[in-house]
Image (cartoon, rainbow, N blue to C red; front, side):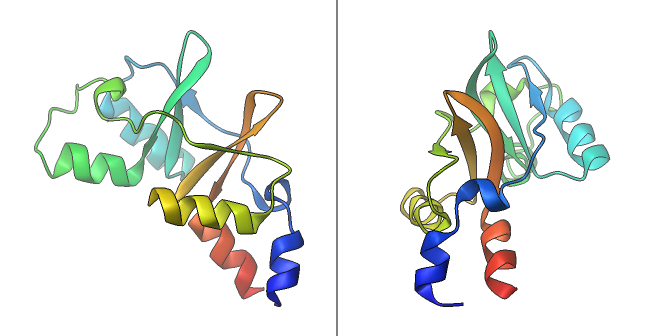
Length: 130
């Protein structure tokens, strides 16, 4: 695929939906079970209905497992915050640039101020491999 084509594909074309969200008091154990049951690697954290962070499988491994934290720890203590987003009508090339510059693998996708999906580095690689 040429770089030109890669730059014309929009985030909305390859993002994942729907999203699971939790409150800041949800425990690491509950998060782990949701990830297992939903076969997902990221969950949005909302406080009073407003997205404030994200918890990823990597956050769980590095912050909980590697530091031997209790599985009862609330997600607000281990989530990545602030939530980094990209607009749904941006190009996947822009998404890749944000991921590289911020050293992240998952980006929340926003539309009119609402989180509507998630785009991951895996989504980008899978699309490139087509």
